[in-house]
Length: 411
Image 1: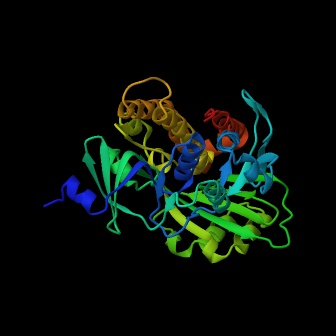
Image 2: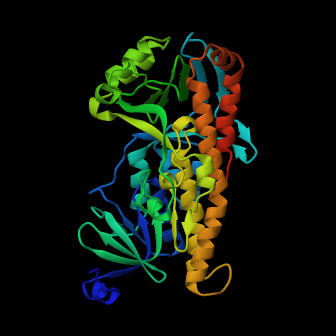
Image 3: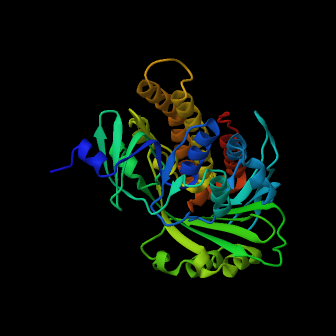
């Protein structure tokens, strides 16, 4: 027989106003935003320490505005290169098909782009939080309801009673499953990512170089003076050897079969095996997202738990930062009594509904656009390749810049 709420309290149940599940980009952004608003929260992280899977993220103007709102934008800018130019090449011919400035003027001001090391970003967010905010090795195994509260059972036997539950626990989100969101779909594509380190300096210009066609997409981006991030996405065939097992060698074989310059090959070759990861690309179909409920009562999701997407816009981490600012603003105002009267539980529900209203269509647009851009970039179809190399490269680049020309607002 399940213990009663009274028995749970007697067993040491802990009351927490806001529980954030997951100490990734979205979870830490939400926690820091709430901290800036004066609202305490607990972040549950299943790992024993911060995880930095993926090595680095493209950080566009929209993400840097979100980091400015959280008070860490300048900290991030100081330790990363400001990228000046995006160059697009054909993997089939080796010819440059498009060049654009990454400082181009948008509707909301000049664009700005960095390639930010994920571990440095997580650490920058964590350092601003009060000690004890993140509870490591804390995995949720069950979620129960008791009136307006959510009772969270952890793997170590601890029990938390939360007024608000926020799922930032990634593509395999326990909270998203509890809300009834459909599982992310496999895109039919894989991504290998790596980080090359040059202790004496890499000598690369501050440019984002991207090659697509020939059935894959590869990019090389310097993070700072010593680190260079690279990625490789493709659609595996039944004739491919197991790419998950060979990783770096598989990528090099593919690149050598195309017109890829030696400097790009050297970046991949320099990467240590431990700094190369391969994973399937998953996404939540936009229509299924629009038909779902991303918030219900005092529960909602953010980050990859909300909008898993393919990486073709470089907006997954950026959107997670947007989520963090918007959610902290809506929830913080609700808990602190802003935006109207009513009982606290009613304000919280209204605040989360407002968050969902703001983020739902933005999320669906990013997911759908990323999927379409990825298809166009990687296609080896002769007609699509000809159009892409001669006319569409510029349009695809403009789409990247348009998606980054977005302002999530202040806290």
